[in-house]
Length: 243
Length: 302
Image (cartoon, rainbow over all chains, first blue to last red; front, side, top):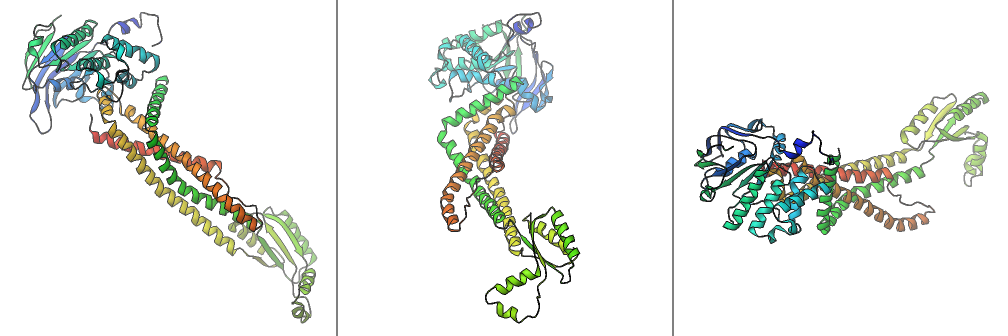
């Protein structure tokens, strides 16, 4: 974007994220050769909400996130992102839907053959952004997660918490409307975990929809934000929609 | 459009950086492709130069027109006119029966034979040089002249030219077959190399797909890699070909001097060089495209 002046036309685009509502309607997911991972799941997530998906391992949290991010498709029911029906999406349209999400994967999925800067650059390159604009955004994202001084560091030389924050920087660099994190505090000690959660709150406060899966229910019960509790593939409990 | 251009540039930069990192492997790859492309190239140079040599030697195929014994001066004039008007005729020479008779009698050893003859048995004759050396063109001219009034017999000694041209046609066919086979080999080599690269970058491809990369985005650097290997291979092939020709020319010059000729092996002309390089680039691109598509479907990343 080269226009520096704010006009009524580009103001809304700059200040607010795209309005994307997520809606699950009686969604089921069965992987070939196994039991149903998810059964009859129905819920809605409004734009800008902060939602925790909780439950034991194997309860279907990861599958749920993958369904939201269009990484998996439901075997029954409908998943609506905005007004796009994920199961009816043409394969060629899937990448463009995925770009609306920032994903923080359970295993980071950082690329260990390049430095922090280049790791964060990947989503921008995919979106066709490069050069100065990319550099600015990458440094801004690294700054936001507190890794600005380490842009040249290789991921392997970073601590677990720093790697996790690098993964978050990569997820937010393309300014997605929805941020999805699978067990972002999984193997971090309490201090690091709190720091990470604070980061997600910060994104929630600027209007990003944040969806976090965690098995650590005790830790977040006191936190604000809606909780979706999964057990054996079913939605066991859903706290009230907060406004 | 600007986005598109910057994406192309990005992919190219990425590939060049990767190739620079693996300099030795890249050089080896270009070497392999160069040698493979060089083989049909050398055959092409041989056939091409034989062609030139054949053109030099048989530049002026001679047709002999033996006229009827009772040819009148009017017919001669008519023939003269036709010969000078025919665009396929380069030059012609008239030999009257008397001058031919003289020549024959002066030849040592033949005096006895001619002495026994009471009168001149020789006809008037024209010796015609055709412009074209192609057997087919010469044949056409010959048949045309055969029909002219006053011509008893038209002759051309073109059998060995025909044989040479048949051989050259065979050579051309051999180039085609060899190019086809080696082209297939190149396709396989490039395909395999790209496939290995894809395997080493599997993680990157996986992550890219998960965060919204299109197949086209993933394919792009590999296509560039294939095309660049092709370019490198084509240039290497041309360099090798040039050195081979230079090396051969040292001996060819010596040999040609013994035959009092200034013949040298010619370098492949611009279109041929471009065809080698362009073909290599195309093969590289195609091999890469094929490999990426196969690998993408095998990786089974949704």
